Length: 180
Image (cartoon, helix red, strand yellow):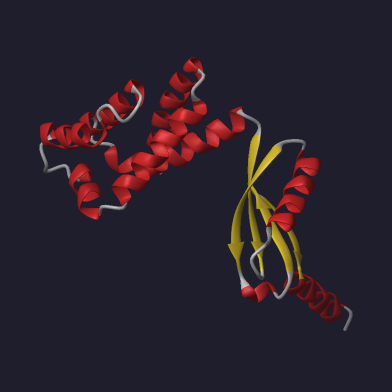
């Protein structure tokens, strides 16, 4: 719980800087690239998160990897995380930053699960319908689950819309058992 709270505070800090500079998208992209890059090399991730490794050595690695590649504020933010021994929180910070950024820009992320891959037309139809329902711009995160049989399940935040065949069959089963 403490780590989640810390990640939120750090994410809020870099978010405020990005908002002041009108660079919400750029900072988000840079944070995501850093996370992806470091997670793709487990040894680098372990090295940067290891409290037994000297701060100077970890900062040197950050410098070699990212100096000149990132905006100055994001680069110095990474160095701050190293100084405060919070670099291991970077994935959680990046996720929270993304949430804050999307909220500020009026974007909702919808997790859409289908039984088979949704083609471009289906994706656009789902996106348009969700935008109409929510009044906001919607980005889709696509998932597949053959157990749905057909249809779609959409999750936006804590709301879940089940339009799947499996969901309808489960509802029908409950209704039939309730009428016994």
